[in-house]
Length: 298
Image (cartoon, rainbow, N blue to C red):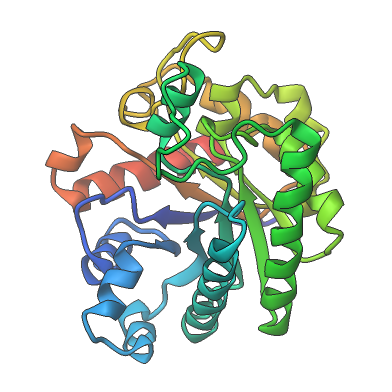
């Protein structure tokens, strides 16, 4: 009996200070079969004047497993049109590079806004984006799901899916929120990006993971983190995620085993925000992370 090799992809945060070209080179050198391309690197490349059709030749055997991310998906009013326009742009790029799915993240992406809101320092005239902060849960889900529904219809027109990533510090940040958004949106091309850091940091449990329908899990981000006080701390990615994968507090093997128990057999993606790793040889970092993921997922 032949055991199928796990599908391992590199999110471009793994080689943090690279650009689109070097990230692809490092993913290849590190032995990854896939790469998850992300803004702002992706947009930086395109905004510099390079045609999107120049990307597929760079890949040459490395699959683009997903494309992200459209941030602050809760945008309302005039900003809602900008959100949908960005979904269109991301979908156009996804088709050009062969990515099957586009990532959406709840907001606000700026965790300092959440810190100020919780501390009572966010004044009414503060122009920073605050997403659904201040709304009750049902209303936050309703307005966000309406955006997800329209984004899903756009993606379906391109033959694509969407995967939601609830950010750990956002108003909608839990596994149950992602499930509620999918149910409320009512579209079958919407799933979840299961990120071990976001899930673990908010207090989502392994039992919740085991209960997920495998078809809803569209990608798994393997990421580590540091301990925090969930009752008082606002998750701060620059602090609580600043660790090499495998060197933090998350019991990654337990999380991988829980995810595998659902029957999930899709892409496992390295995602890392380590200041120490960022100052090392990116090929060595990519190779080490690919080896670690291969060990974890078996």
